[in-house]
Image (cartoon, rainbow, N blue to C red; front, top):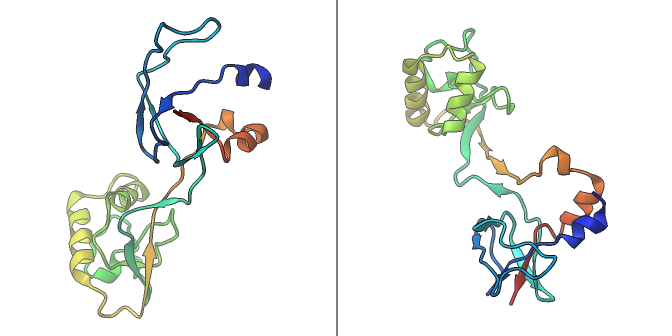
Length: 187
């Protein structure tokens, strides 16, 4: 399918005002049905992945900064985490409750209650053999351990970035959608 054919099959939805990121835009049937050569309503609603701004009667999406998690996880970098020989072993101090290898925080120990992503990471890195008792003790020690002996606190934050599928990541697609993406018509 060539670019001219793709642009000819443009699909838009008229809205009162440009939607913000994470909005749901309801679709509708046109009065009198679709015009000749045009298709009708494709689905009942559309998810808006990017924030939009009005430009020449259209809502133009733009790629905003990455979204971050609500609460970053505090970790201690100095002194470093006391790595246990066995990843599934029972910790005896907060300094033995380490971060994850996959995000390179395993040398740091937790100063906050871990979120679900960290708990799942512990399970994954232990090959699924970590017991619920060990997980519960890690959570307890991280919550209660505090940072009294911590000389350097670091934050672990999660970024969320919306990505397209691999099949859509062509240079032309990237160029066309970097600033425009899916459009909605204002009117």
